[in-house]
Structures are given as structure tokens and as C-alpha cells.
Amino acid sequence: MDPQQLGFTPQRPVGWLAPLLLLNTGLRTLLAVLFGAYLDKRELQNALDDDWFDHSQTEDGELWLDYVADLGDGFHATYSVAYLLAQSRLDLGDASLPRGRLLLMGGDQVYPLASGDGYESRMKGPYRAALPEPPVASPQPTLFALPGNHDWYDGLTAFLRLFARRKDGHIGGWRTEQRRSYFAVKLPANWWLFSIDEQFGAYIDDPQLVYFEAAARHVGPQDRVIVMTPSPKWVKSVDDPEEYDAIDYFIRTILDPTGATTRVLVSGDLHHYARYSDPQRELITCGGGGAYLLGTQNLPDELVVPQPDTLTRNRSVSRSYAFRSSYPDAATSKRLGWSVFRRVPTRNPGFVTMLGIVHTLTMLAMAGAAAVGGGVLQRLFSIPLTLMLVLILAGAVAFAQPPKADRPKHARHWIAGLLHGFAHIGLAAGGTWVWLELPFHNWEWPGPLIVAVIAYGPVSGFLATQLTALYLLIAASADVNLNELYAGQGIEDSKSFLRMHIAADGTLTIHPIGIDRICRDWTADPDGAPDSPWLRPREPLTPHRIEAPIEVR
Image 1: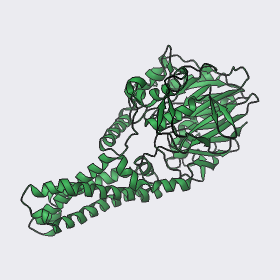
Image 2: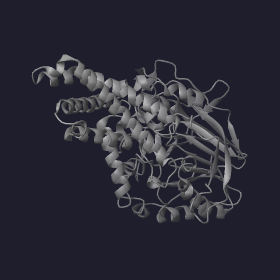
Image 3: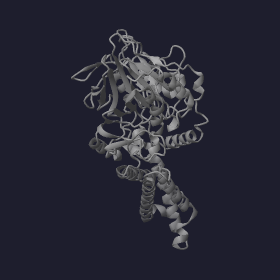
Image 4: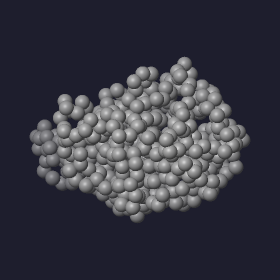
């Protein structure tokens, strides 16, 4: 795959535990939280076109549409999903489903940080390679995209340039129509799509509310609505009851006054498929477009939204939603979690190196303190050793990401972080004991330092990584660092997306599609038709149903 011929450079999956990436992403996240309100471009979008979009008129009164989210990561996973989305039909054994006339991207179209080059290599390039030109035998499909938190890290600059172009907007064979980071689309058979942009989970800005109020004037009591959100706040409200407030406010103040019924809420952000429902509404998470897999074993059996504990005074009546299905299932997720011991070291060599350096410096500080005269307390509180111990404990607690003191599980995160830190200190103490039992520490300087760097560093780095892997496996069972358990592994398989169909009689059928194993070996097809993929899979790429089709009437 020559980048000169493809027009982009295929990317490896993001190594989420790489030290520089951890630092960079952490700083950007902090800056976004601290200064996001000052960089919020949603207010400026009030100057852009405020049209809503009409895709309700089709020849047969029906419409197929696709939904994918969390897609801009490693090439093989991203292109595997893009390839299937671009095919004219998707064969599932018992059915053949045509390509969607609309492609809805639900957020995080690029990882780890938004930039023009990042979008080109991790999203636009792979999707252009999957569908280079508009289809010859069918109408040109349209692409709409909603920004996620990773799209927001540059203040939405690159996102708007890519997806909200005023003229001739297209990504490969898909055309783009939107002019803002949010949009409303009229669909056939009295269906509507409303896609809301919550910048880092913040309030919905006034220009956005005005935009949707204008679109909602065309919605009637007979209509049904699909709401796209950047994050499944119905799941996240379990730990933070206020997470769902913005969505509840939107439905309560914009949609409910029209008399229409909100039948489906769909989101990405969590990198798996999960569905909750009651007789009136489906709550679907489908974030399997290309990013690392996130396990489903900690999902609750029931959700209640809005949460009764929320402080919002005028919230809607709380409703219970039962767990229906997930992909992968809980048992498979637990089994995949055990691969952390193998995957973390191989996926994150920089992380192993960092831990090796920390443990080597700690061992040298401990060995130096042991050689210093004086009492035990004097040795323990030597300046180099104290600095290393504080660094280890602070790093371990920060890694556990304790929430605010008034949030649930606050103490759990602190305890897990401290135990993790003390475990590393215990490992360092054991390593120091072994070091002092060997003859190296008595060699003439710089002999001990050379041996420590060449031998002790790699060994301690590997052992410390295994200790961290063990911590992640245990902590995840207490719902602490579950995301890091899977992000560190970078599992590319078990991808998912939705193919939906609106029938002429108004029935919405949702087909959740899973891909157990992505393709990692591609062959070029230079002689294909203009609208055929540039690369085709050498190995089988087999989609399947995650669960039976979901009918919404």
C-alpha cells in the first residue's frame, strides 16, 4: 500500500499507553476542560447556514441509512468497516441489505487528536479508498457527521473544514451537506433525525437550540424522531446523574412540545454495541467503527433515566430501560480482558520503557539510601528516595482517575490508585533487595549504572508492566480503569455498525452488524470500476447479525 498511490499514509492503531501520548492527551483534555468555553465555536456557527435537510422524498417511499461511530483509528479496523459500508449490498446469509443512502457518523472521526493530517490519514483517506467515486448504479449517498470529544480537541476547526464545506463537499463517493456541527434531517414516512452537539458534555448552546426550534416547527404529532448524541449519557448517568440532563432538556423542550415521539437514541463513544429499551424507546450504543474494543461486562442490567438523583427540577418522568443485548457479550469481554498480560507490553513498548526507567531510578535511590549511614527513618526520607516514592504514588492515583469527591466511587478510585502505587513500591523494594544481593552494586562507578540500565531496566520494566496489567484486570472488576484495561490492549476485532431501514409503512428496522475479525491483508484493485474499492480483502471479511432485527413502529 504505497502512500503516494493511495494519497494518504495508512496508520497503525494508537498506542494509548504511550507516555508522550498520555501526557499530550492529558494536557489537551485539561486545556479543553479549562478553556473549552472560550474556544467553543458553536456560538460562531450562528453565522452559518441554518437549513435543515429533507431526505424524505424517495422513489419507493423507503430509505436505507447507516450509522457508524468511533472510526478514525488504525487503518485495518477503520478500512474493514468502511469497506463493508461502501459495498452496494451487505450479505448476511438470511438477507441482503443495500448500502445506506445516508451515512451517519456519530463522533470521534479521528484519534487521538483532531487535525487536518489526522483526518486525512485516519478517516478521509480510508473512506475515499472504500468508495472513491459516487456509485454508478444508484444515487449518490450523503454523509452527515457529529463531533465527539476527540473532534473537539482543536476547538472543532478541522472538523468544520472537512464536514461543513460550503461548496462541493464530498469524502470519496459520499457528498456532505451539513453546514454546522449539528443538524436535523427529515426522513420518509414521518421520521426525523435530530443530531445534537454537546461540547464535552456541556450545555446545548442557544444558537443550536434556535436552529432545532426552527426545524421542530415542521415536526407534527404523527412524527417519530431518532436522536443522535455524541455520548451515551443514559449509561454514564449511572455514575453521574447529571450527565443525561442536557439530552432530557432537549427532548422535553424541543421535541415533546411538537407531539412527536422520540423512539430511538443512538450514540457511540463507548467502543462496543449495547442496547437498552422499554416499550416506547430504544437506547443504543454503537461505537465499533474502528477504535479499540471496550468490554461490556460492567454494563448494568437496567438503566433509569433521567436519574432520580439529578438536581434538575423540571426533569422528565424517570423511566426504566432493560438491558437487551451487547457485543461482545460479557463472557467474551472477560475472556478478552485476560489478554492484557500479553497485549499491553507488545502494544505499548514506550510504556514498558517508562516503567523501566522509573523502577531503575527508584532502585538506585533505595540502594543509595540503604548505603547511607544513620537510622532507618533517615534512610527512608532521603531526598531522592522520597521524590521517587511520591512520584509513584501520585502517578498511580492519577492513573486511577478519581472523580470529584461528591461523585459515586470516589473512594474506590483513590483506594485502587494507592494500592497500585504501593504494589509498585513493593516491587521496587524487592528489586532493590535482589540488586544488593548481586555483586554489581559494589563495582567501580559507572559499572553499577551501566548494568542497571542494560539489565535491570528492561527486566524491571517488563515486571512492572505485568504488575500494571494485573492491577488493570483486578481494578476493572470494581469498575475502575475498565477503559484502560482495553485501551492498553488495542483490540482491533469485534467491530460493529448499524444498518437501518425505513419502510413505506413507517416501520423502522435496525440491523446491528458485527465483525468478529477484521481484515489485515489487502490487495490492490487498480483495474476496478471508478466507484469500486481501491483495496480488497485477501482474507475473509464476514459481517453477521449481532441480534435479530429491531423493529420500531
